[in-house]
Amino acid sequence: MSDHPRILFVCLHGAAKSVLAAADCERLAASRGLRVTADFAGTEPDADIAPKVAAALRADGVDLGGKKPRRVTREDVARADHIVAFGCDLGVPVPAGVRVDQWADVPAVSAGLPAARAAIHAHLERLLEEWRRP
Image (cartoon, rainbow, N blue to C red; front, side, top):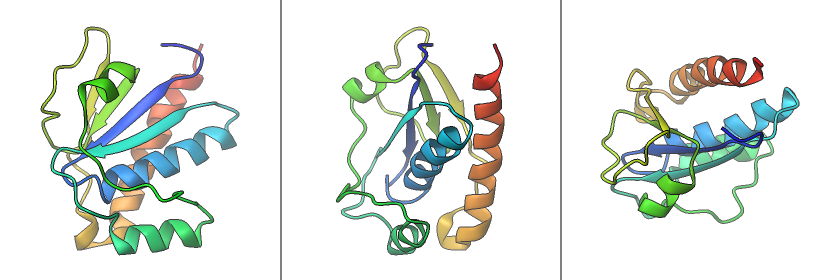
């Protein structure tokens, strides 16, 4: 892994879990002095980011810059150092050496945004702690 890891978060619709994870990953990494680039995509993308997710991120001061859900591509996967999927099959081949984690235990955002965000946060804490170790 480079000193500037690129992580790709992928969920079914690319509109909720992956969006939260990408936004929170970059913020949590920055608070630890780590530089991380995070992106999100979906295997069957919705037209827009889930309204509850967009509102929650705006309330936290996160500007999504007009980003929209999009289908995960071979190029996305090839650029990533690390991929996190939320219980979905990526649908594209993963190059050798790219770590793929499944965070299938994260509850649906539609079932409760705070619970989903807390589960994502816990996973991110563990992941970022791994990256801090020499």
